[in-house]
Image 1 (tube, rainbow, N blue to C red):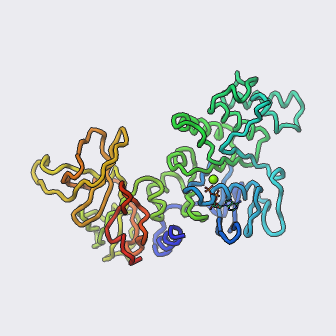
Image 2 (image 1 turned 90 degrees about the vertical axis):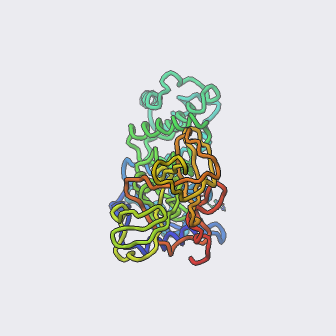
Image 3 (image 1 turned 135 degrees about the vertical axis):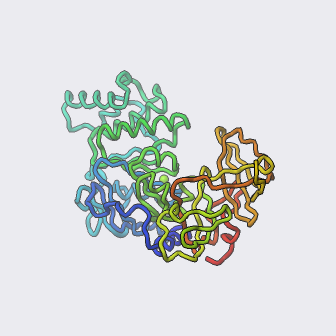
Length: 409
Ligand code: ADP
Ligand code: MG
């Protein structure tokens, strides 16, 4: 529970909110969860979760394995009953108090990780499966439209085992869209696909969802997938929402260290706020560059969030003019197009920086690390550093200042 506990503190002690204040929580969306809770035995899996999803929106629940994403979808679909709180669809209570509507009464479509097509039915028959209410002509027309929508015009007569993974997923998607659900739930829909196909299909799925205008909630543990297919991302940890907002906002202005670390590589540069500037091991940073740094943080220690592309390492000796170095390369991860370096500054702070694959800086090299970011940087109060270090370096070590290892939390 440490993550959510800590980050709640992170937020409540800060006077200036950083981002998701405009989440229209009470605007009355297609789907609303109000203080929903769910336990299995004594284990609390979802705790007081509130969320509102707007018409036509694609919202992604993003969080580590076991944080409660699938449980949340099951509560929305009516496959599970919450212990407390309310679920409303189009303003009608479907779970809450004495009310509990069965899944088939909710108008919710679900696409699971296993596409679960009927193997003995063709693609067209699979899609037609949920269209019992229509007469034959209307059904055929709807199936043809859906095959067209998912780019399988010529594959209607194929059986699932004659289709590729991506094609099977299109059929599964068309099948769940066929009855025009009020809301579509997608649980890790890309996890059974090869990496290349996954990237291609998530763009395709976004296109299809937007073409139909359906409201959708997808679930993933893959931050890149969440950032690329969603209108809004809801970051989850330990059964609670950490932050809900547009992908850019959540990435650039994370409200907790957990969110910062979950949405990409995150290092924390310690600084001391002195009037117009924040003094750091990498020099003075203008206060204007620190996002929403409230006046009461004057003369206090903060940690500035730096992403690997915000930093640049120059090997000592190759510098013209001032050859002074301030750190040593202690980690190196080859990622193909780029190399992620970990640099330990002379005060013990560890920071990660990203370079082009041809950088060629060896391990143990002395470097001068500089802050090259020109955009606003997020920050967290240093007195709320996690005791157990949520940001891990290339060797599993804590990234940030060595004090982060202490128990002064
Ligand atoms: P996620 O989808 O984010 O990986 P889940 O919602 O599947 O997470 O599970 C959240 C937690 O609830 C896990 O600790 C899991 O073990 C537990 N859990 C889920 N379903 C059940 C169940 N039917 N009975 C007991 N525990 C469950
Ligand atoms: Mg799951």
